Length: 166
Ligand SMILES: Cc1cc2nc3c(=O)[nH]c(=O)nc-3n(C[C@H](O)[C@H](O)[C@H](O)COP(=O)(O)O)c2cc1C
Image (tube, protein in one colour):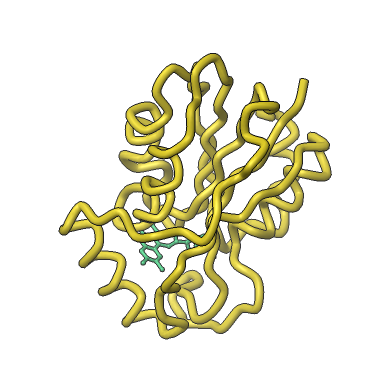
């Protein structure tokens, strides 16, 4: 069984339990690296051609603009060997109740027929939101398992949650 972790994550200024803090590595990336260690899956980061701002409030507005427009912002690359994976762990932050629009751009371009998908979302209070349903819509032909929500500010200690579900 070959497994791939497809993830989106943003470093920079973010909101942690009541205050803004600058981080060098995004919460989802921390969780994705843990998931890779636990499962042996290969990591692939979905990177925007035009990244959202490091400034939290600007980023919030950019993400809202793209969500409201139903945008499919360009991503730098997709995995070239996607065919060889039968399991795909999709990891992303909750942006306005669902995945960042860059994940929609990526997932809609890939062929998920026959693959097993595990959605894993990091968030700051709203859990998976609508993202599970959106993953199902984007990953046509996949068997999408129940999603896992991890609180972004607790991501350093999410090993047990990941081990139990992946
Ligand atoms: C643009 C934006 C929108 C967000 N919207 C939500 C939200 O609707 N619900 C929520 O619980 N957290 C929301 N958050 C918090 C993030 O989901 C959370 O901090 C996540 O762990 C960030 O992951 P990252 O560091 O890997 O990018 C939002 C954060 C940003 C930057």
